[in-house]
Image (cartoon, rainbow, N blue to C red; front, side):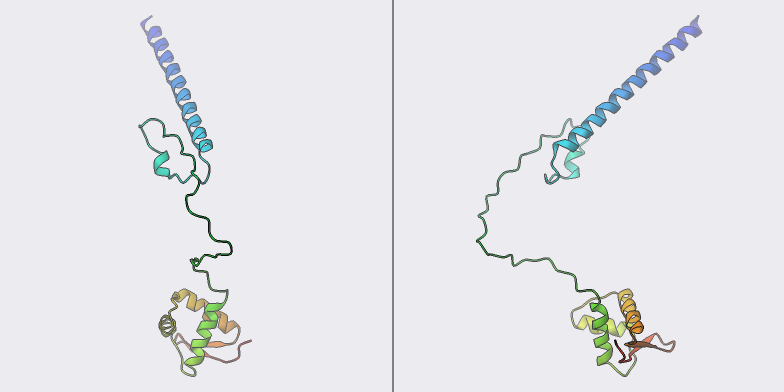
Length: 157
């Protein structure tokens, strides 16, 4: 009889645990749905404000206020622009010019990089190698033996 009562008590405890877990899970999922639908995508909030643990609910989202800045004059353009990427193939053209300037002597990639830096351009060694291979395919440059140096060939397409 004592064993039956203990078994029944354990079953009831397990039922309560499962019900509490299900209720907590559904409440958590509802909170996530509320948070996802409450804020517009460009609300400007960060993850730090929405993931506060143990402090209750997050404060309601603020409504966007109209801008107080004066509108720009008609026809005015911005003077600040983000740096744009150089056009495709420009590395090979710059390296070809350096090889032309240093012809007929062979040039190491480190010397090419130094010449580019003197001109205000920074390129990685991997990009220099890639450009040299492109120039080799165009027959504009050639490797000099096994010396890891390159020479301008002058047969560019």
